[in-house]
Length: 248
Ligand code: FPP
Image 1 (cartoon, rainbow, N blue to C red):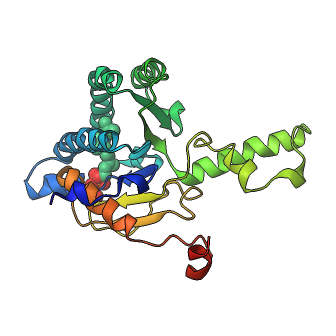
Image 2 (spheres, helix red, strand yellow):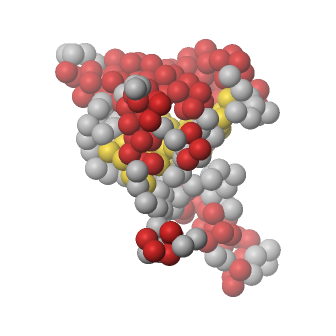
């Protein structure tokens, strides 16, 4: 029996988020530059996007570049931006053929003009696609997002557009960059690190976490299926007891 056949297609997570980690170590093992790992990481991006779409996952969020990643050597940052540009440019047709919508979350003001325009074009072009939404977290950090959201809401309170007593979880969520996206049910991190690294801190309050030692460029369809099978074996209680859940 193939791994994919062990997945209950009726209980798929609607939204999977992935911290793609280990590109550098993958390259180092092969005595190559860091960027060689990122180039091979793009192969995993393509394979996992296709696998999620074929399975029927509705949202896939990939942590492609964090706010902190801007502090990497300029040569590496430039190479990642070029890779991003090329990948989006080359994959837009594929997104159209496969009915995939592209979205981006993050502080996009920091991207260079060429990259920004390229992304906006692909987002616009794919905006009516409905099979799956691929969300790229780019120049993203959760603390940036939470602070930014707080500023927006504070401004609205100051202008009497929002009453301070109306601020609650739902209102706050509706001003996050992820307002139109359901919270992830499964978060995968590759490379054997047990950290969240400033990713979707608000949104993962009840998310199931899955850590794998696989380095991102080695992460393939079967690794994704294993994570989903593991997720489906868990009991999600949202603060309730097992008995309460079973009586629902
Ligand atoms: C983490 O590995 C990965 C990144 C910081 C960048 C990920 C980028 C890509 C896969 C390419 C561009 C993406 C898209 C969506 C086209 P690391 O460098 O931190 O690895 P290490 O921890 O082993 O050093």
